[in-house]
Length: 439
Image 1: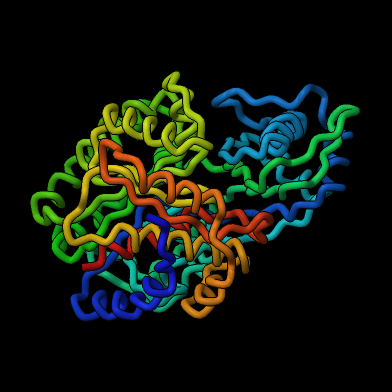
Image 2: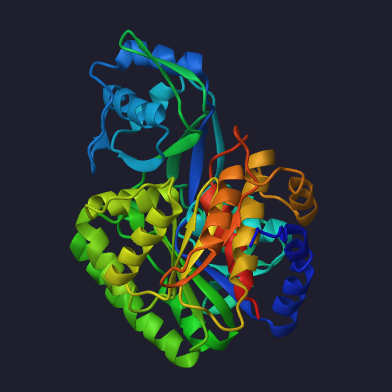
């Protein structure tokens, strides 16, 4: 059966979602990390000049490498850009940030999956409760939407009441557009896909601190949670640190699930999670989470690391890879989002319209890609003029004729060949996805 476009139908449900949150005083919850993104304004000429001066080797990157100097920066960022890859790499030397100002203009914005997700909901008028690690004034000013709250002394308060005097945690972000030409050691390469690389200059998130008073508030008010979106584990690289953090959170998740069996815990993954901790993290979390979210790059990368052959241009191959992951990590379902479509694959969820979540995730992320900021309901409506992805429509047609092992729901995206913005699109998608859990 051909895909039926229900984007407008679902967008018109948002005011009702807002009313339910206010009337029940229940919330979508986002945790755990936030930071200040220093966004490098891309300019191909400036990047080529940087390559000419600092690229001493062929572009390359090996997992867990760090950027220690400008030569590392040139080699690693060039590798990501010419392949159209996205990812996250650590910067160990603050001088690199200063030297980049010789080549690029740097602008600032909000960073962190939960922080960006909450801000995206705030722009839509949807209330949310959030745990953040960077509470500096520079970060919180990006989240001054009515209805966004956190906790203080185990009480729920407006997020603006949580401002601290701490310095901001900086993550550099470079986005590169499809089609730009890079001059690499006498050769020219065309950027094959618009994407972004995140470069962290940040020691705090290596331990991912979580406030006990926030956890206690949730435990005391578990029945007032619609969903619990968790992320931020990607910066942890030490297994002992991870075990300590998970010991704290496992107890917490058990309490929540006992008090509110209907609560949906949604974990947004990241393909740049260290291989040394990934399997342990996933195996522990799979005992508590309901949905694991990832983008197409993460699915491809995870399949590759598991030596599983995946052709992302073949929907049957994609579903086969997801079958494999569901056996490895027995969560209820996986949400995979890409530039062409969003897909839920797993067990059916009673009374939850997963198509609605996938559609709103697509719409909100497409709006951010189109206009460069978190979209309002009116701006999302304008995005409906963007065509549906032909590749996504083709996949929807193919999947409707298949008999997969699990429930498969696929929604084509509103597709842009050259988005204005590629930063935070996955985080914005996750925010829209949570709307389907408001019952």
